[in-house]
Length: 259
Length: 321
Image (cartoon, rainbow over all chains, first blue to last red; front, side, top):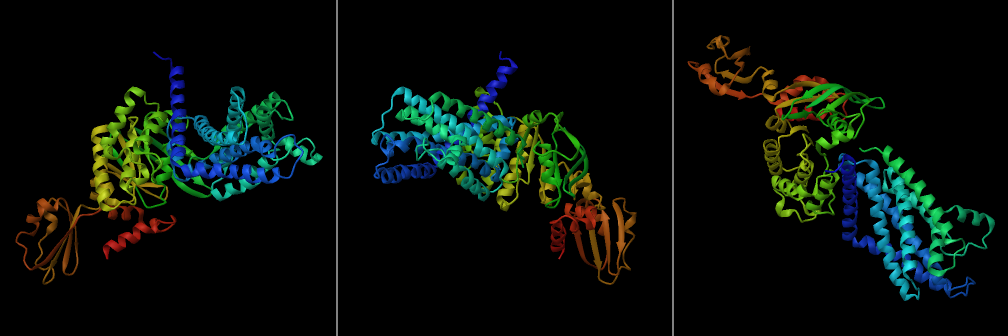
């Protein structure tokens, strides 16, 4: 016999699996979504990477390789925040209502959603990593494990961010505004496209506040051994950011109107 | 099964529900009948714990909707007005996701999914994506989904809204089947009078957030004074006999050329009524509909405050003309 607590845990795991399964199936069937969201990072990688790379910058490595970690982050940032926005669709088409009327807690629904976001991000990053091989980037087991961990942590945090916005905003148009004011700055100010060592003070300050900076730096550490800060510090800051985003996200989800 | 006490839901100054109290018995089909905007959906949302009432409370299957929301949710099934299945998933996948959400153990999950698919006649289409389903099929999938976890109470919010007459008939057949096979208490909302008449054991008329009448369809119609027979005579009513002597006649109204008789059971009593009558030009017979009853109880208020409330009245006028 299972104790009530074990039983509850089993049910909660089942619920998480259900929510993840739904997201995963939709993801597999909406290939256009996958193709479209992989295309933009590749455009950056090849056009900006090759274009600026031809100008002989002093960054210690080939520019295309230099921005490779940043492009991975870009893919995660866009995918994850957008993924959170799909909660607006779920509300519009009443799918969320049917979930809310089931005996699962809001926290479970929230975590289930973020698991879906993490999976989506991971798939996209996998495609970019494979293309990286063609660009002459070398991985080993350790660096791959590090990359996966960083992607999962960052994606968890940013899906939470997307879900937080999605729980307050009722229209997709409103969400576009968030994208301009939050998603683009997160990316551009993360040092994904330039080294952050010799920036003017004001810009340096903003990049230090941007949590994405530490994911770019962590990836640069593990892929290129070119980080500004230590890998451990990067991960610690990322985890702290993720914790804060998760708490805010769950709080927002709990006070979100069901109908 | 459901006890509703003094339920109030305010949006700003607008009362969506205005002091609602009634009870629903076990294993009955209870119909909430009223025009759009009367508060039916608001009530369902409160009973399903999706909305919190401003005042008052309700007990569903022994659980308080305010303090035991999770237990309430575990014991109810809900079919919302708009289909809420994910149309990228197949019918089967939608059911599987919800079976997991309700914590149905793996051993009985597959069996129960086949059971409900069979119940609503979708087993042939279970592996098709829901976006390929017709409106009626989607609605039936929702019903199957709502019944997965053997709920004690089943809410159906406008189950036939927007369906063509044939799909509506099919839906009614399925709803009757559910009651027979699943032994659930059903609360359904509708603004189709004939739907309520056909399916419900008891009906609550709801208008402007209040229950204005509550009884079985037949007794509600009896309140109108039974069946109505109008006899028109060729040469005025001088030849008419005294109809009030019959035990089955409630009331007689005399006009210049005709009498209107309110009576029980026209089908079995008409022959006695018209025996030996001469100079009869025509006999008209009308059974009162729930529509008549609703108009009697709601009066003018129907076309008043509620934004879409005029609909039923206009509809009634249209039917009369």
